[in-house]
Image 1: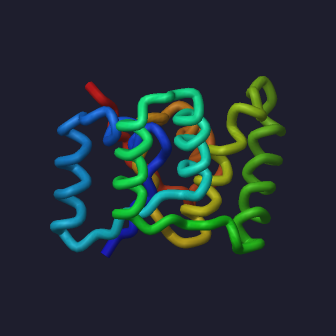
Image 2 (image 1 turned 135 degrees about the vertical axis):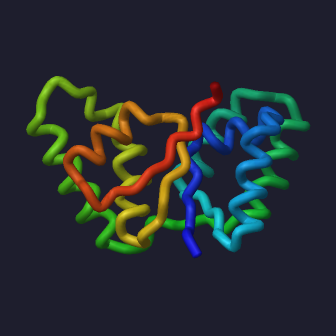
Length: 143
């Protein structure tokens, strides 16, 4: 059984009613895989919804998050891994390290618990993979 952690963009696609993403999640579950999401993604979505006064979107997210286990950042090793990734990427230079913070923490969580990240954000996650070969992700581009 593989455990997949959804990146925030995948959760957004599910909320947008993109059937392709819903079907892919269902297919993974039917094969016996588990789907989770990070507390960071929960936070990112909730922040976005605070600006959205549409109660149906808020209710939809409440229904979605209840179906999946949320992984909390309550393991010091996650932060050790994340800080190592940050250092390696920062040494490359020329990257906006602030914009990579959430992705680095999601990647570190995936590494610590041997999860596979489901994402549309291949650009940033390829960078992380280039410095941390243990990191696994799967591209779910919308096209």
